[in-house]
Image 1 (cartoon, protein in one colour):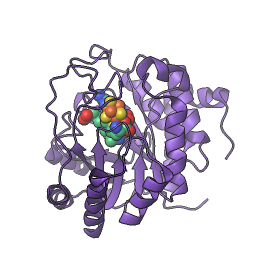
Image 2 (cartoon, helix red, strand yellow):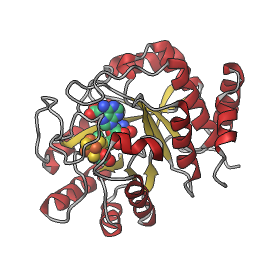
Image 3 (cartoon, rainbow, N blue to C red):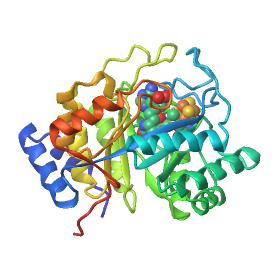
Length: 320
Ligand code: SAM
Ligand code: DTB
Ligand code: SF4
């Protein structure tokens, strides 16, 4: 699919809300189980003291957020967490490390051991470990990792306002290496970083222009964290948030659109609107990586009230 023009994306985004949701539902009903929501669990396997200066992140060593640093978890402890996530109903287990990049050595070897163990439980394995080489991506794939998460976060133009220790092309190169190694891509962004609507649409343009498109697109709402430069950012307008979800669904029909960070600040009704707009995955578990997430029992209750059910995979089910 050729990269959509910004004008065409803006035209979708600006549709009357009712028509936008209708168009998103048409795509959603055609390509996906409309009642299915994939439940993913996050595990921070190495927490804090990250060298990057991402202005939103509680884990950056550049800011004083009071976060307790936790060194790399050993494979056994990770497996215990994965078994618990599986028992709670998760089908995908995502391991996150506060690393700028993967370095070869005993720590990466230990992550590979954990990846094999989690995969052997029958869980879909996703990793998010920062930048990596193609060789490292290949070793992750061989160990049983299916997906690599690496977010573009915002538009190319706004990126340098948020992060100075790496650039947009670094992100795109890592995504390309993960893809060449045969990993599926999970890449999305954060709303609420002081960006304009145009920045959000440019982010969607970048993601939709990847060839092939990402398999999974997490849309996060900033979780403002004391001590970070974005601690006092204004919350995103809820209808603008829903419009971005719907536009992502229309532009990337086959992708899993993940309603990611920021749900504790959302009402049940707003989350339901996000599902109607085409979101078909959430993170399950009382913690994301370091910040709170809704109680699993509350999430399962919400899905039940909406007549939605957990699905093993949020990939497109239809061909066409
Ligand atoms: N260090 C790796 C990286 O940056 O790719 C992996 C872990 S990093 C925490 C994963 C993603 O979490 C970031 O790309 C960002 O999109 C998201 N994130 C981090 N802090 C956040 C916050 N306060 N609110 C919402 N999303 C956040
Ligand atoms: C993504 O896009 N969101 C998740 C996952 N990918 C790794 C991470 C959200 C982190 C929110 C901040 C925290 O809990 O530290
Ligand atoms: Fe580090 Fe990732 Fe946080 Fe940036 S988002 S500071 S790279 S953990």
